Image (tube, rainbow, N blue to C red; front, top):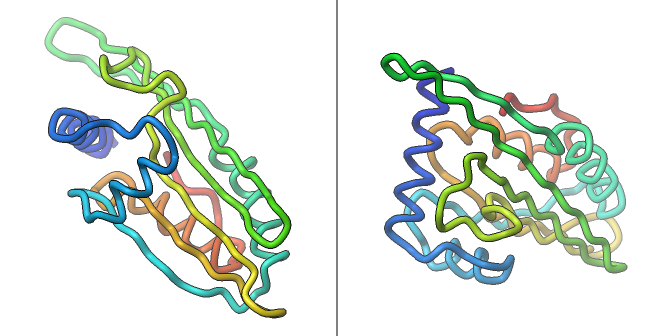
Length: 165
């Protein structure tokens, strides 16, 4: 567990040190689409239907991703305590929907935007009567694989278990 936390924090620091931190959802999508390091963009269709995919994604994001994770770690003689506050949001606009997951770290990194760091974005669109078309943008690094697999599964219409964050 300590290795995953350390890797995630290190990757976040590397990303924020090497590139400008996206300040809004569209900047985040542009950075990921451009092939930024440690990120991935997937485009796929779900045969489960738009309404089912949207309902499942909303349910699972509320149930699994609206959490605060507290961590403590001894560094020499010091106890370091931190929190990761995950902030999912879901907007449905008729035949299209947007899912966004941001995270706030406490103590706060100096370059973190006020609303938190953009971690995942998904655009879901109705495709015909029986499909949903999904664009998924997110991290491709150790420590986030389980979360991304769960989100991808939910967007495909599969009711998977909550990931460990």
